[in-house]
Image (cartoon, rainbow, N blue to C red; front, side):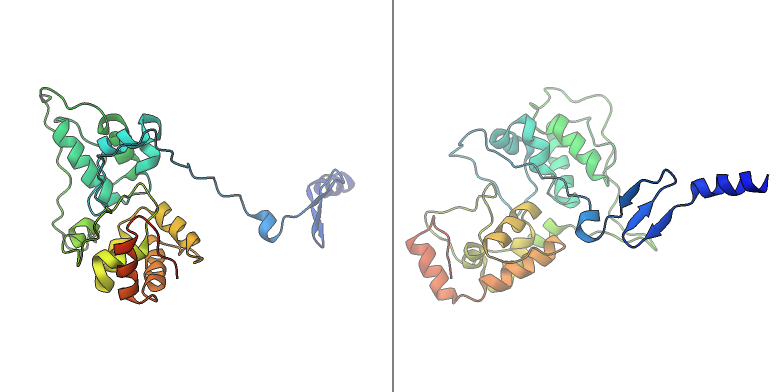
Length: 252
């Protein structure tokens, strides 16, 4: 009996020697180490505009308009075009959509997936002719209660942003990769980091790669790094460059 128990127990023992694991069947399997053990991150969707729209103007300092995103990217890419925006930005888009579709609302206002589900369903749809009989539930009050942490609204903070100059012949287009030098020419040094932080994380990461800067762990950190790079160039040179070449990108 003792021999049987010992033999059964031995069958479940896994002996480890160096970087190898020996199973009870005698098969030696290598143990993953370092980079090989890490899961490969999923590839992000590459957005492809479905049409050129000359009259399209998107304000990067306001919540994204799902109907404008629909015109630019189509229904199949609508969710992917919106998913990089912050929770506060998507709430603004949902309120915009609620005005067009009375009686509708996201399942939960503080859940990003529910907001994206709502915007994907109603954001690009034509406005309703008549409101639904059941009123839409209002979002939770922003009045803080004791012990409650209130998330700041980035677009409320963005309201004081004021351009310090206008570059004739060029408009800000969030469908393109953000240009930190052009934003510096428009908003100046004091507002540059705040203006950058309002762009989608994917656009900031792409701009960081173009500038040879490693993206930060957060959107704010990436914006700080891009602002630091852009501020190295003399501001007079940057402004003079865009006044002569408004549709080009400044290079140091």
